[in-house]
Image 1 (tube, helix red, strand yellow):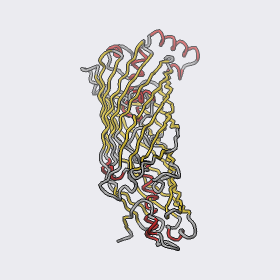
Image 2: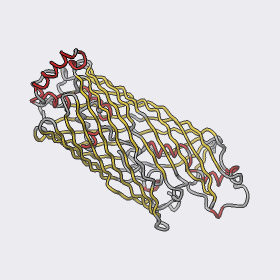
Image 3: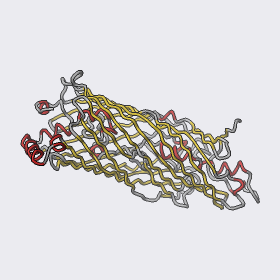
Image 4: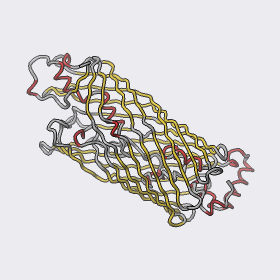
Length: 485
Protein backbone atom coordinates (compact mmCIF):
# COMPACT_ATOMS: atom_id res chain seq x y z
CA UNK A 1 0.00 0.00 0.00
CA UNK A 2 2.78 2.40 -1.01
CA UNK A 3 4.50 2.02 2.35
CA UNK A 4 1.55 3.56 4.21
CA UNK A 5 0.01 1.84 7.18
CA UNK A 6 -2.27 2.66 10.06
CA UNK A 7 -0.98 1.07 13.25
CA UNK A 8 -2.81 0.43 16.52
CA UNK A 9 -1.72 2.32 19.62
CA UNK A 10 -0.98 1.42 23.19
CA UNK A 11 1.09 -1.27 24.95
CA UNK A 12 1.38 -4.71 23.45
CA UNK A 13 -0.71 -7.21 25.46
CA UNK A 14 1.34 -9.89 27.20
CA UNK A 15 -0.68 -12.70 25.68
CA UNK A 16 0.71 -12.10 22.19
CA UNK A 17 4.33 -12.46 23.31
CA UNK A 18 5.81 -15.66 21.93
CA UNK A 19 9.11 -17.05 23.08
CA UNK A 20 12.12 -15.63 21.32
CA UNK A 21 12.22 -12.59 19.05
CA UNK A 22 8.91 -10.94 18.32
CA UNK A 23 7.54 -10.36 14.83
CA UNK A 24 8.37 -6.87 13.56
CA UNK A 25 4.82 -5.65 12.91
CA UNK A 26 3.28 -6.36 16.35
CA UNK A 27 6.18 -4.78 18.19
CA UNK A 28 6.14 -1.74 15.94
CA UNK A 29 2.46 -1.50 16.72
CA UNK A 30 3.38 -1.33 20.37
CA UNK A 31 5.76 1.48 19.55
CA UNK A 32 3.12 3.34 17.53
CA UNK A 33 2.77 6.24 19.98
CA UNK A 34 6.49 7.01 19.97
CA UNK A 35 6.49 8.55 16.51
CA UNK A 36 8.09 11.96 16.35
CA UNK A 37 5.13 13.58 14.67
CA UNK A 38 2.63 12.45 17.29
CA UNK A 39 4.88 13.78 20.01
CA UNK A 40 5.40 17.10 18.29
CA UNK A 41 1.72 17.56 17.62
CA UNK A 42 0.89 16.89 21.22
CA UNK A 43 3.47 19.41 22.35
CA UNK A 44 3.24 22.12 19.70
CA UNK A 45 -0.27 22.28 18.36
CA UNK A 46 -1.94 23.17 21.61
CA UNK A 47 -4.17 26.24 21.54
CA UNK A 48 -4.42 26.64 25.28
CA UNK A 49 -3.34 29.79 27.06
CA UNK A 50 -1.02 28.74 29.90
CA UNK A 51 -3.21 25.80 30.76
CA UNK A 52 -2.81 22.54 32.57
CA UNK A 53 0.03 21.20 30.48
CA UNK A 54 1.49 24.62 29.83
CA UNK A 55 2.16 24.07 26.11
CA UNK A 56 0.91 27.31 24.61
CA UNK A 57 1.37 30.45 26.66
CA UNK A 58 -0.83 33.37 25.62
CA UNK A 59 0.28 35.40 28.64
CA UNK A 60 3.12 37.45 27.15
CA UNK A 61 2.62 40.63 29.21
CA UNK A 62 1.60 41.06 32.83
CA UNK A 63 -0.88 43.84 32.04
CA UNK A 64 -2.57 41.59 29.47
CA UNK A 65 -2.51 38.66 31.91
CA UNK A 66 -4.41 40.69 34.50
CA UNK A 67 -7.03 41.51 31.84
CA UNK A 68 -7.32 37.81 30.82
CA UNK A 69 -5.66 38.62 27.50
CA UNK A 70 -8.49 40.94 26.47
CA UNK A 71 -6.26 43.57 24.83
CA UNK A 72 -6.92 43.17 21.10
CA UNK A 73 -8.59 46.57 20.92
CA UNK A 74 -6.20 48.27 23.34
CA UNK A 75 -2.78 46.57 23.69
CA UNK A 76 -1.41 49.59 25.55
CA UNK A 77 2.34 48.90 25.26
CA UNK A 78 4.98 47.28 23.05
CA UNK A 79 3.58 43.77 23.69
CA UNK A 80 1.11 44.74 20.96
CA UNK A 81 3.68 43.07 18.68
CA UNK A 82 2.22 39.80 19.97
CA UNK A 83 -1.40 40.74 20.70
CA UNK A 84 -2.18 43.15 17.85
CA UNK A 85 0.72 44.62 15.82
CA UNK A 86 -1.31 47.71 14.88
CA UNK A 87 -1.08 48.79 18.52
CA UNK A 88 2.51 49.99 18.27
CA UNK A 89 1.38 52.76 15.88
CA UNK A 90 -0.44 54.34 18.84
CA UNK A 91 2.67 54.50 21.02
CA UNK A 92 5.06 57.44 21.15
CA UNK A 93 8.84 57.50 21.43
CA UNK A 94 10.85 54.38 22.32
CA UNK A 95 8.92 51.73 24.26
CA UNK A 96 10.49 48.68 25.88
CA UNK A 97 8.60 45.92 27.73
CA UNK A 98 10.51 43.06 29.33
CA UNK A 99 9.34 40.39 31.72
CA UNK A 100 8.81 36.75 32.60
CA UNK A 101 5.87 34.39 32.99
CA UNK A 102 6.07 31.67 35.63
CA UNK A 103 3.89 28.70 34.69
CA UNK A 104 2.96 25.93 37.17
CA UNK A 105 0.73 23.31 35.51
CA UNK A 106 -0.85 20.28 37.14
CA UNK A 107 -2.33 17.12 35.60
CA UNK A 108 -3.73 13.97 37.20
CA UNK A 109 -5.21 10.81 35.70
CA UNK A 110 -7.72 8.42 37.31
CA UNK A 111 -7.95 5.01 35.69
CA UNK A 112 -11.37 3.77 34.63
CA UNK A 113 -10.14 0.20 35.14
CA UNK A 114 -9.02 0.16 38.78
CA UNK A 115 -9.49 3.73 40.02
CA UNK A 116 -5.78 4.27 40.57
CA UNK A 117 -4.50 7.86 40.33
CA UNK A 118 -1.34 9.08 38.60
CA UNK A 119 -0.01 12.63 38.81
CA UNK A 120 2.47 14.29 36.49
CA UNK A 121 5.57 15.56 38.26
CA UNK A 122 5.05 19.09 39.57
CA UNK A 123 7.18 21.57 37.65
CA UNK A 124 7.43 25.32 37.24
CA UNK A 125 9.07 26.85 34.22
CA UNK A 126 10.01 30.38 33.22
CA UNK A 127 9.21 31.99 29.87
CA UNK A 128 10.84 35.38 29.17
CA UNK A 129 9.55 38.13 26.87
CA UNK A 130 11.07 41.25 25.35
CA UNK A 131 9.25 43.75 23.13
CA UNK A 132 10.62 46.99 21.69
CA UNK A 133 8.80 49.59 19.57
CA UNK A 134 9.82 52.97 18.19
CA UNK A 135 7.68 55.68 16.66
CA UNK A 136 9.93 56.51 13.72
CA UNK A 137 7.64 59.22 12.33
CA UNK A 138 4.10 60.50 12.52
CA UNK A 139 3.14 57.75 10.07
CA UNK A 140 5.45 54.81 10.81
CA UNK A 141 6.24 52.72 13.88
CA UNK A 142 8.62 49.76 13.92
CA UNK A 143 9.32 47.09 16.50
CA UNK A 144 10.40 43.57 17.25
CA UNK A 145 9.55 40.95 19.83
CA UNK A 146 11.40 37.95 21.25
CA UNK A 147 9.20 35.58 23.21
CA UNK A 148 8.27 31.95 23.75
CA UNK A 149 4.56 31.24 23.29
CA UNK A 150 5.13 27.47 23.32
CA UNK A 151 6.98 25.72 26.13
CA UNK A 152 6.73 22.47 28.02
CA UNK A 153 8.32 20.42 30.77
CA UNK A 154 6.18 17.29 31.11
CA UNK A 155 7.17 14.27 33.21
CA UNK A 156 4.94 11.27 33.98
CA UNK A 157 6.20 8.66 36.49
CA UNK A 158 7.35 5.16 35.52
CA UNK A 159 4.11 3.75 36.97
CA UNK A 160 1.93 5.84 34.65
CA UNK A 161 -0.60 3.80 32.65
CA UNK A 162 0.17 6.17 29.78
CA UNK A 163 3.91 5.54 29.76
CA UNK A 164 3.56 3.85 26.37
CA UNK A 165 2.36 7.23 25.06
CA UNK A 166 4.78 9.60 26.82
CA UNK A 167 7.12 9.58 29.83
CA UNK A 168 9.09 12.79 29.49
CA UNK A 169 8.77 15.66 27.05
CA UNK A 170 10.39 19.03 26.57
CA UNK A 171 9.49 21.66 24.00
CA UNK A 172 11.41 24.88 23.36
CA UNK A 173 10.40 27.55 20.87
CA UNK A 174 11.59 31.06 20.18
CA UNK A 175 9.50 33.55 18.22
CA UNK A 176 11.30 36.55 16.73
CA UNK A 177 8.78 39.00 15.26
CA UNK A 178 9.88 42.14 13.39
CA UNK A 179 6.86 44.43 13.02
CA UNK A 180 5.78 47.48 11.01
CA UNK A 181 2.73 49.61 11.78
CA UNK A 182 1.13 52.67 10.17
CA UNK A 183 -0.81 55.40 11.96
CA UNK A 184 -3.37 56.44 9.30
CA UNK A 185 -5.33 59.06 11.23
CA UNK A 186 -4.37 61.80 8.78
CA UNK A 187 -6.44 59.95 6.17
CA UNK A 188 -8.87 57.89 8.30
CA UNK A 189 -9.08 59.36 11.82
CA UNK A 190 -8.53 56.72 14.50
CA UNK A 191 -7.27 53.96 12.17
CA UNK A 192 -3.97 52.06 12.51
CA UNK A 193 -2.65 49.01 10.65
CA UNK A 194 0.19 46.66 11.56
CA UNK A 195 1.88 43.47 10.38
CA UNK A 196 4.68 41.23 11.57
CA UNK A 197 6.78 38.32 10.39
CA UNK A 198 7.20 35.34 12.75
CA UNK A 199 10.58 33.58 12.63
CA UNK A 200 10.20 30.36 14.60
CA UNK A 201 13.10 28.05 15.50
CA UNK A 202 11.97 25.16 17.72
CA UNK A 203 13.20 21.92 19.22
CA UNK A 204 11.64 18.98 21.01
CA UNK A 205 12.70 15.97 23.05
CA UNK A 206 10.51 13.02 23.98
CA UNK A 207 10.94 9.69 25.73
CA UNK A 208 8.47 6.86 26.30
CA UNK A 209 8.27 3.20 27.14
CA UNK A 210 7.58 0.29 24.81
CA UNK A 211 5.93 -2.56 26.68
CA UNK A 212 6.57 -6.24 25.96
CA UNK A 213 4.36 -7.72 28.63
CA UNK A 214 6.31 -7.10 31.84
CA UNK A 215 9.50 -6.22 29.95
CA UNK A 216 10.16 -2.61 29.00
CA UNK A 217 12.07 -1.01 26.17
CA UNK A 218 12.49 2.72 25.65
CA UNK A 219 12.69 5.18 22.81
CA UNK A 220 14.14 8.69 22.84
CA UNK A 221 13.28 11.19 20.15
CA UNK A 222 14.62 14.62 19.30
CA UNK A 223 13.85 16.99 16.47
CA UNK A 224 14.34 20.53 15.22
CA UNK A 225 12.48 22.81 12.87
CA UNK A 226 12.54 26.36 11.57
CA UNK A 227 9.48 28.00 10.09
CA UNK A 228 8.06 31.36 9.10
CA UNK A 229 4.60 32.79 9.68
CA UNK A 230 2.90 36.17 9.62
CA UNK A 231 0.43 38.24 11.57
CA UNK A 232 -1.56 41.40 10.93
CA UNK A 233 -3.87 43.65 12.88
CA UNK A 234 -6.13 46.70 12.85
CA UNK A 235 -7.12 49.11 15.61
CA UNK A 236 -9.83 51.72 15.17
CA UNK A 237 -10.93 54.45 17.56
CA UNK A 238 -13.85 56.28 15.89
CA UNK A 239 -13.70 60.03 16.65
CA UNK A 240 -17.49 60.15 16.94
CA UNK A 241 -17.32 57.49 19.71
CA UNK A 242 -14.34 58.48 21.85
CA UNK A 243 -15.14 55.91 24.54
CA UNK A 244 -15.06 52.98 22.11
CA UNK A 245 -12.14 51.19 20.47
CA UNK A 246 -12.00 48.13 18.20
CA UNK A 247 -9.32 45.63 17.22
CA UNK A 248 -8.97 42.81 14.72
CA UNK A 249 -6.04 40.40 14.34
CA UNK A 250 -5.10 37.53 12.04
CA UNK A 251 -2.31 35.00 12.46
CA UNK A 252 -1.37 32.80 9.54
CA UNK A 253 -0.83 29.05 9.60
CA UNK A 254 2.76 28.06 10.41
CA UNK A 255 4.04 24.85 8.87
CA UNK A 256 6.71 23.06 10.90
CA UNK A 257 8.86 20.54 9.02
CA UNK A 258 10.55 18.60 11.79
CA UNK A 259 13.64 16.48 11.16
CA UNK A 260 14.96 14.36 13.99
CA UNK A 261 16.42 11.15 15.33
CA UNK A 262 14.90 8.10 16.99
CA UNK A 263 16.97 5.99 19.40
CA UNK A 264 15.49 2.65 20.51
CA UNK A 265 16.87 0.82 23.55
CA UNK A 266 15.81 -2.77 24.21
CA UNK A 267 17.24 -6.11 25.28
CA UNK A 268 18.73 -8.29 22.52
CA UNK A 269 15.60 -10.46 22.61
CA UNK A 270 13.34 -7.61 21.51
CA UNK A 271 15.66 -5.24 19.66
CA UNK A 272 15.33 -6.98 16.25
CA UNK A 273 11.58 -6.40 16.39
CA UNK A 274 11.91 -2.60 16.72
CA UNK A 275 12.61 -0.15 13.89
CA UNK A 276 16.26 0.76 13.36
CA UNK A 277 17.67 3.89 14.91
CA UNK A 278 17.76 6.72 12.43
CA UNK A 279 15.99 9.66 10.87
CA UNK A 280 12.31 10.45 11.39
CA UNK A 281 10.34 13.37 9.98
CA UNK A 282 6.90 14.86 9.87
CA UNK A 283 5.12 18.05 8.92
CA UNK A 284 2.59 19.72 11.18
CA UNK A 285 0.83 23.05 10.81
CA UNK A 286 -0.13 25.48 13.53
CA UNK A 287 -3.60 26.70 12.59
CA UNK A 288 -4.66 30.11 11.46
CA UNK A 289 -6.49 32.24 14.01
CA UNK A 290 -8.66 35.34 14.11
CA UNK A 291 -9.21 37.66 17.08
CA UNK A 292 -11.77 40.42 17.52
CA UNK A 293 -11.88 42.88 20.41
CA UNK A 294 -14.24 45.67 21.51
CA UNK A 295 -13.34 48.03 24.36
CA UNK A 296 -15.55 50.58 26.12
CA UNK A 297 -14.79 53.20 28.78
CA UNK A 298 -17.88 53.49 31.04
CA UNK A 299 -16.15 56.19 33.10
CA UNK A 300 -12.87 58.08 32.81
CA UNK A 301 -10.08 55.71 33.88
CA UNK A 302 -12.23 52.57 33.65
CA UNK A 303 -12.16 50.28 30.63
CA UNK A 304 -13.95 47.01 29.83
CA UNK A 305 -12.96 44.86 26.86
CA UNK A 306 -14.51 41.74 25.34
CA UNK A 307 -12.46 39.62 22.95
CA UNK A 308 -13.31 36.55 20.89
CA UNK A 309 -10.80 34.18 19.27
CA UNK A 310 -11.30 31.51 16.62
CA UNK A 311 -8.70 28.89 15.72
CA UNK A 312 -8.96 26.60 12.72
CA UNK A 313 -8.02 23.31 14.34
CA UNK A 314 -10.23 21.26 12.01
CA UNK A 315 -7.30 21.34 9.56
CA UNK A 316 -5.57 18.84 11.86
CA UNK A 317 -7.39 15.76 10.65
CA UNK A 318 -4.56 13.25 10.14
CA UNK A 319 -0.89 12.94 10.97
CA UNK A 320 1.70 11.15 8.78
CA UNK A 321 5.21 10.30 9.97
CA UNK A 322 8.06 8.83 7.95
CA UNK A 323 9.90 6.21 10.03
CA UNK A 324 13.59 5.18 9.76
CA UNK A 325 12.74 2.17 7.57
CA UNK A 326 10.99 4.41 5.03
CA UNK A 327 7.44 3.42 5.90
CA UNK A 328 4.77 6.00 6.76
CA UNK A 329 2.84 5.80 10.00
CA UNK A 330 -0.62 7.43 9.78
CA UNK A 331 -3.14 8.27 12.49
CA UNK A 332 -6.50 10.01 12.48
CA UNK A 333 -6.90 12.99 14.86
CA UNK A 334 -10.18 14.68 13.83
CA UNK A 335 -9.67 17.87 15.82
CA UNK A 336 -12.32 20.59 15.74
CA UNK A 337 -12.26 24.38 15.42
CA UNK A 338 -12.25 26.10 18.81
CA UNK A 339 -13.50 29.37 20.30
CA UNK A 340 -12.26 31.46 23.21
CA UNK A 341 -14.12 34.26 25.00
CA UNK A 342 -12.19 36.80 27.07
CA UNK A 343 -13.53 39.59 29.28
CA UNK A 344 -11.12 42.02 30.91
CA UNK A 345 -11.50 45.17 32.98
CA UNK A 346 -8.98 47.80 34.06
CA UNK A 347 -9.44 50.67 36.51
CA UNK A 348 -6.85 53.47 36.75
CA UNK A 349 -6.93 55.97 39.62
CA UNK A 350 -4.75 58.74 41.01
CA UNK A 351 -3.30 58.86 37.49
CA UNK A 352 -0.74 56.27 38.56
CA UNK A 353 -2.26 53.02 39.85
CA UNK A 354 -4.20 50.34 37.94
CA UNK A 355 -6.20 47.30 39.00
CA UNK A 356 -7.33 44.57 36.58
CA UNK A 357 -9.70 41.60 36.51
CA UNK A 358 -10.47 39.06 33.82
CA UNK A 359 -12.41 35.93 32.81
CA UNK A 360 -11.77 33.34 30.06
CA UNK A 361 -13.90 30.55 28.63
CA UNK A 362 -11.64 28.36 26.49
CA UNK A 363 -12.95 25.54 24.30
CA UNK A 364 -10.79 22.49 23.66
CA UNK A 365 -10.36 21.27 20.07
CA UNK A 366 -9.49 17.72 21.15
CA UNK A 367 -12.28 15.14 20.84
CA UNK A 368 -12.71 12.66 23.67
CA UNK A 369 -11.80 9.84 21.26
CA UNK A 370 -8.18 11.08 21.04
CA UNK A 371 -7.75 12.39 24.60
CA UNK A 372 -4.59 10.89 26.10
CA UNK A 373 -1.47 11.51 28.19
CA UNK A 374 0.21 13.55 25.47
CA UNK A 375 -2.51 16.19 25.71
CA UNK A 376 -4.80 16.09 28.77
CA UNK A 377 -7.20 18.80 27.72
CA UNK A 378 -10.69 20.07 28.57
CA UNK A 379 -12.89 23.14 28.18
CA UNK A 380 -11.60 25.59 30.72
CA UNK A 381 -12.61 28.53 32.89
CA UNK A 382 -9.83 30.94 33.85
CA UNK A 383 -9.81 33.85 36.31
CA UNK A 384 -7.21 36.61 36.38
CA UNK A 385 -6.24 39.72 38.31
CA UNK A 386 -3.43 42.22 38.18
CA UNK A 387 -2.03 45.51 39.39
CA UNK A 388 0.09 48.19 37.76
CA UNK A 389 2.12 51.11 39.05
CA UNK A 390 3.62 54.15 37.31
CA UNK A 391 6.99 54.40 39.02
CA UNK A 392 7.91 57.59 37.16
CA UNK A 393 7.32 59.29 33.84
CA UNK A 394 9.57 56.67 32.22
CA UNK A 395 9.02 53.45 34.18
CA UNK A 396 6.01 51.23 34.92
CA UNK A 397 5.74 47.90 36.70
CA UNK A 398 2.93 45.35 36.19
CA UNK A 399 1.97 42.11 37.90
CA UNK A 400 -0.61 39.66 36.55
CA UNK A 401 -1.92 36.37 37.94
CA UNK A 402 -4.08 33.82 36.11
CA UNK A 403 -5.62 30.65 37.55
CA UNK A 404 -7.04 27.85 35.43
CA UNK A 405 -9.88 26.43 37.53
CA UNK A 406 -9.72 22.66 38.05
CA UNK A 407 -11.50 20.81 35.27
CA UNK A 408 -11.95 17.13 34.54
CA UNK A 409 -12.66 15.24 31.36
CA UNK A 410 -13.08 11.56 30.60
CA UNK A 411 -11.94 9.65 27.57
CA UNK A 412 -14.49 8.35 25.10
CA UNK A 413 -15.96 4.87 25.59
CA UNK A 414 -17.51 4.58 22.13
CA UNK A 415 -14.49 2.74 20.74
CA UNK A 416 -12.99 0.13 23.11
CA UNK A 417 -9.55 0.62 21.53
CA UNK A 418 -9.38 4.42 21.13
CA UNK A 419 -7.96 5.88 23.18
CA UNK A 420 -6.15 2.77 24.45
CA UNK A 421 -6.08 3.91 28.11
CA UNK A 422 -9.49 4.84 29.52
CA UNK A 423 -10.02 7.19 32.43
CA UNK A 424 -10.44 10.78 33.57
CA UNK A 425 -7.94 13.65 33.49
CA UNK A 426 -7.97 16.49 36.01
CA UNK A 427 -6.08 19.64 35.06
CA UNK A 428 -5.38 23.10 36.46
CA UNK A 429 -2.58 25.70 36.36
CA UNK A 430 -1.21 28.90 37.83
CA UNK A 431 0.48 31.63 35.80
CA UNK A 432 2.26 34.65 37.31
CA UNK A 433 3.67 37.37 35.06
CA UNK A 434 5.87 40.37 35.89
CA UNK A 435 6.87 43.03 33.36
CA UNK A 436 8.81 46.27 33.48
CA UNK A 437 7.90 48.96 30.96
CA UNK A 438 10.24 51.74 29.88
CA UNK A 439 9.36 54.80 27.79
CA UNK A 440 12.22 56.99 26.57
CA UNK A 441 11.26 60.23 24.85
CA UNK A 442 13.38 62.28 22.47
CA UNK A 443 14.71 64.48 25.25
CA UNK A 444 15.73 61.52 27.37
CA UNK A 445 17.49 59.81 24.45
CA UNK A 446 19.13 62.57 22.41
CA UNK A 447 19.71 65.49 24.77
CA UNK A 448 22.57 66.02 27.15
CA UNK A 449 22.16 65.77 30.95
CA UNK A 450 21.09 69.39 31.44
CA UNK A 451 18.63 69.38 28.58
CA UNK A 452 17.24 65.99 29.62
CA UNK A 453 16.72 67.23 33.19
CA UNK A 454 14.91 70.30 31.90
CA UNK A 455 12.72 68.14 29.67
CA UNK A 456 11.90 65.81 32.58
CA UNK A 457 10.88 68.76 34.74
CA UNK A 458 8.65 70.06 31.97
CA UNK A 459 7.08 66.65 31.59
CA UNK A 460 6.37 66.40 35.33
CA UNK A 461 4.89 69.90 35.31
CA UNK A 462 2.57 68.96 32.48
CA UNK A 463 1.02 66.36 34.77
CA UNK A 464 0.58 62.64 34.53
CA UNK A 465 -2.26 62.99 32.00
CA UNK A 466 0.45 63.08 29.33
CA UNK A 467 1.79 59.74 30.60
CA UNK A 468 -1.62 58.15 30.58
CA UNK A 469 -2.32 59.26 27.01
CA UNK A 470 1.06 58.02 25.82
CA UNK A 471 1.02 54.69 27.58
CA UNK A 472 -2.63 53.79 27.28
CA UNK A 473 -2.74 54.91 23.66
CA UNK A 474 -6.23 56.33 24.26
CA UNK A 475 -5.50 59.17 21.87
CA UNK A 476 -9.18 59.76 21.15
CA UNK A 477 -9.98 60.72 24.73
CA UNK A 478 -10.83 64.43 25.11
CA UNK A 479 -8.01 65.06 27.57
CA UNK A 480 -5.53 63.45 25.17
CA UNK A 481 -6.63 65.54 22.21
CA UNK A 482 -5.29 68.67 23.93
CA UNK A 483 -1.77 67.29 24.15
CA UNK A 484 0.97 67.80 21.57
CA UNK A 485 1.67 64.77 19.36
